[in-house]
Image (cartoon, rainbow, N blue to C red):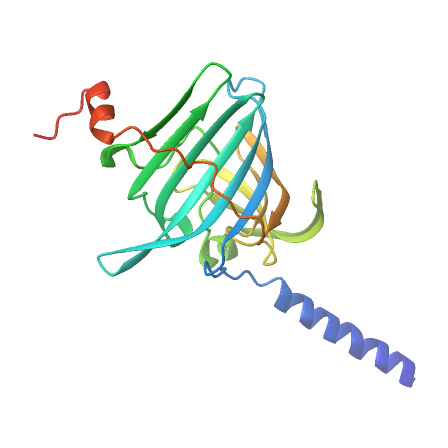
Amino acid sequence: MKKIKLAIYLSIVSLMLGCVEEKYTEPDWNKSVFVEYNVVQKKSNKIGNYLIRYTLLNKKDTINDTVYHWLEMDGWVGETFFGFKMLIPYGYRDRAKAMIVKVKTPEKLEVVEMPYELSNYPTNLITPYLYNVSQIDSGKVDIEEINTPMGKFRCIKSVVRNKYTGTIDTVWVNNKIPLFRIVKVKTPESTMEIKTFSFHGIKSFITEKPIDSTEIKKRLGINNE
């Protein structure tokens, strides 16, 4: 009888601890970190499959008493590299205040500072923002253990509306994943799964001096006067 009672007690404790672990929380952005994902696109997408790395750099700026973070989004498609270095608010829940774009192919290299008017979400790529607790809780479907290139993760599975693209996406989140908490996200166009993350070896892939935004405005025919 004592063994049965102990087994029941341990089961209850385990269940309680599991519930605590599976309660979604938002991360701190106090440490530099990078998180890498594999992205598989639908065959109709011209970009193709790619590796993408999100890096929270050790640099912040304050604008109107609000702290903004420098986030770099770097991707590799075959021999082509693309990168966005962006000054964004916590969670990337609002548009970037500044953006430097780098594209490198075997034929050319171009690094440009985008005009403020264009410093918003690059919608042709998976660029996650940090889902808030109410989004995950209201869209929660199940608790699932899924396999990824990084290994197995026990996740909260939730269906959410992407605030930028308007699509209905399925996300798998885990509180052990830094930056965006995302283990996997499936959109109508692609699937992204975590490959690795680290708080060490942080580096920027965009170190060149960009073309001044004035030159880019001329190319695009933008006139602020």
